[in-house]
Image 1: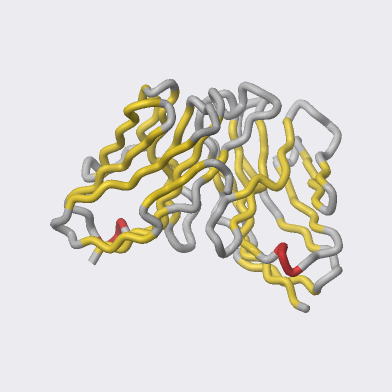
Image 2 (image 1 turned 90 degrees about the horizontal axis):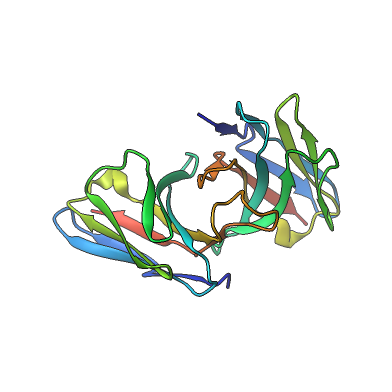
Length: 117
Length: 113
C-alpha cells in the first residue's frame, strides 16, 4: 500500500452510462494526477491538480471530467465513453510539484481497470 | 515537448544474473529529474530509483543502479543479482520544474528461474 487508494478496482460500463472513478490519499500531498495506461502506449498524463486547482489538462476529451473537492480526494467523472477509452486509469499524488524537492516522488494507486462495452 | 523512449518492449534475465534496461529522453532543460518506476502484476507503481540531473554521480539503491549520461540523454537501469520478485513492467520517467511526470512506454522484465 502506498497511501493512495483508488475505487473501484474494476469497472465495466456501457457507452451511455455515467460513472465516476475515485482516488483518495492521506499522505498530506497537495498535488494529484490522473494517468491513462493503454496497452503498448506510454502512460498518458490526463490532468494535474495542485492545491485543488487544475493546472494541467492534456487535451483530454470532454467526456472525461475531473473534480478535486479537497487535497485528499480526486474524481474522474465519465460519460458517453468510447470503447477506445478502455484502459487502466492511475491516480497519483505528490507534495507540491514533482521536482521542487529532492525527496519528492509520486505515489500511485493501484488503478481502475475500465472496460467500455 | 519532453519525450521518453524505452526501446526494449520486453527483456528476460536469468535469476541471479544482471540485466540493463535502456531509456533515452529528450529535453531542452538543464535541470530535471529522472526516475525508474516498477509496476508488478498488482499494478501498483513503485519508485525504484531517482536521479537529479545536476548530480554527476550515478544513483544506486541496493541491487539497482543507473548509468546517467547527460550529454547523450541516456538513463539506463541496471539490476544486479536478479530475483523472481523483480519481474514487472519498468517505466522510465522524466520531470522538470512543472507538475508533469512524462513516462516511456515501459519494458516488461521476465525473470527465469
